[in-house]
Image (cartoon, rainbow, N blue to C red; front, side, top):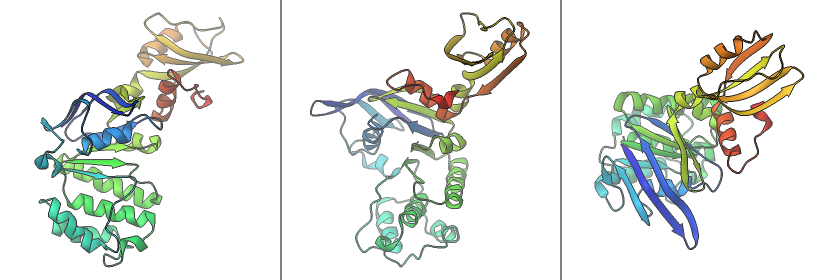
Length: 299
């Protein structure tokens, strides 16, 4: 569905994107994460056809996005800074979206009213709270029925109940229409609940791109206490970090956790436990291997 190959973009002497490679399959919910300045927003603007690439290509359904009206009619973005006309209300913005997205569903717009009971569609959007403005943006976006929905910090400003409701509606659209969703967010805990694939960006590159299950299944935290002292693993396992509190050692290990556990149990440990890392912990570790210090959250 989305394919980015060798994408480069510079502003003056600053290289914002440095050969980005990315693939998002049809019907995937893809989480794009990275520290501030990693290039996420610049990448999103290329996916929307706002920026022209210096080099490389950005394809959606096998076609270039830039200056491609047919593709842009199928792609919609909800940015962190929402756009709406001054003095406009929800109904006026609905007419604006209908003029751009030919698949806009009027019946769906009416059905979704009950999910946004606090929104008066005739009230000026400027007079709504930030959270209510976000609700309007989602309401309109879902009714446009895009093939690709791009979200930049999507649920920032929403209360927990509305956040859950928004994700529920989006996931229903993914299940029903195989809509593809790309989410850029710093809320890794939330992404862990909804995403099936993750890309980690750093300094203009996608360093890691995997399914969430593969990413979590390949790195684990093992806590072990052995009478013989420091536990050792075969060379096929990469011990990324090791610390200890008394006789209990904590190891961050790359490799099959079940095989690591079986090997450690041969030493007849008094304590051994394998814990999966959260997406937040994996992100902190991966960044720790680049420019960041590995935080105590891992241990």
